[in-house]
Each structure stands twice: as C-alpha cells, then as structure tokens.
Length: 177
Image 1: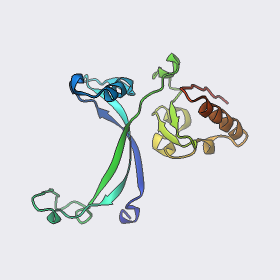
Image 2: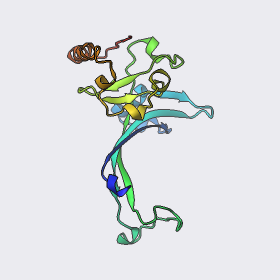
Image 3: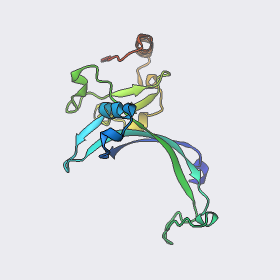
Image 4: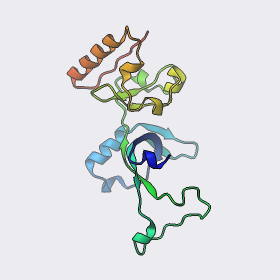
C-alpha cells in the first residue's frame, strides 16, 4: 500500500529544538523571523522549541549501490528493507500573529489559533483544537474551513474572511455560536 501512495502530498506539524547559532552570523531577515517564531518556551530541560509546518511528498530513493561511496545501514529484519524511499519536505516556521494579549494565553483550553490560505484552507492549527472541537491539527490541515461550519453560518464566515483579506493586515476575529 505504501507504493500506491508514493508522491502523495504529506503534511505535519512538529516542534523542533531551536539551535544556539550566534546571532551575529545570522542574516537580518532570519533573526526577525526567529524573534517572531511561535515559541513554546523552554521545556523542562531548558531547551527552546519552535513550531514548524512541514509539507512534502514521499519519493522513491534508489538503492545505495547506485552511489559508490555512500553507505546507508539497514537492518536485515527491517519490514521495509526492499522499499527505498525518502520524504522530500519543506519546513515553514509558524510565526504567530499576536493581535491581542488574550490570544496568547496558552492556558485557555477553550480557544485555539488557526491560520488560513486565501481560499480558506487551514495552513496552521494549534494543538488546543483537540480540546475545543475534537479534531487533531492534521485532521484540519489542507481542508477548507467553511466545510466545518454549520450550513446556516457558512455565508457569514465567508463574508468575514473576505473582509479580513481586504484589510491586508493582521486581524483578530472572535466567532462564537
């Protein structure tokens, strides 16, 4: 079944440990993105993490004997020893648009933050959505948000979304039923 899905688009959100590169060696744009990252703060061991949205696809990878000098160890009892594949992905730093202090209260389990493409597709969903709606972020990523609204509310949500796009800036909208 894995071969049938080769080339299929994949997406996931993960937390990646933030390195300790000297800020003087970074380009200005990278430093600005680093300051705006959606940091989860230090973990119990004091390490900082950033939220990264990875999208890509599974690609066939030729056996290592096609590349002299390249050695890849694979256990003989590996279930996928005959399947040579890799994930080709792009990781995008998930920066947070903090329009209000209330939106950053991660202790509030009755709220969640999402980001959407211009067509209404979810491009980022924070983990708190599980407590509020019962979906995991991966259940929603790439799906159109209007499909999850009640039929009678869809037009109002679309109109609000269109208004946000026309304003061309950060915008915070609280929608409740």
